[in-house]
Length: 243
Image (tube, rainbow, N blue to C red):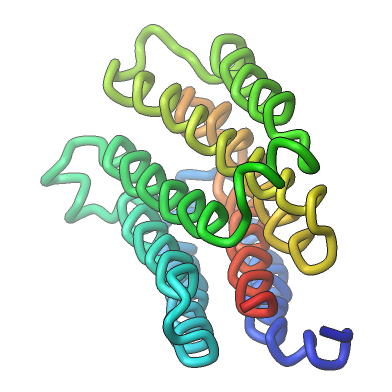
């Protein structure tokens, strides 16, 4: 697929990220994360919802009958549910105490869907033989565990959140390893979901050492969210272009 054919598929993801930066300008004067969050919830859920609709409209319509065409938007659906929990709406806070654990579970399910989509399209022989899957998998499982130990773990935080974040890091690392391995094995458009996986790693690394750990810098929600939207957009666009 040439660039001109790829541009229409990238219109929605690129617009979502571009508009996010415009939104960021509107809250730059607010000097704490706690004050910013109520101003951002609606916009962030709307951005996520746009990508959700994009996934369910574009992939099944143009790639009916291919399992990945349903697994990828299903992953975005679980992500949207995770976004609802992670945005900590007051009504959800009252019912769950701290909904972050349910957000972690939702995103774990999303990564499983993306993993299933990748392995449905690329053989394990190619991933291992040409995509260097084994060293990638080892590195992208060990590194998140090290980062968790030194930057995410906090003994005073709820144990289920700490345990969930640790397991999620392994699942996310596996998804990223598979996406990068597929790109190394087959090149071309596979580099789009591989780049999306890299942005996912960045987004969740920042969220891990801020929200999950209990730190609250002023950019607590903006940096993870813009990298997260870029990640989801690249994954959705990449699979749509390939399928």
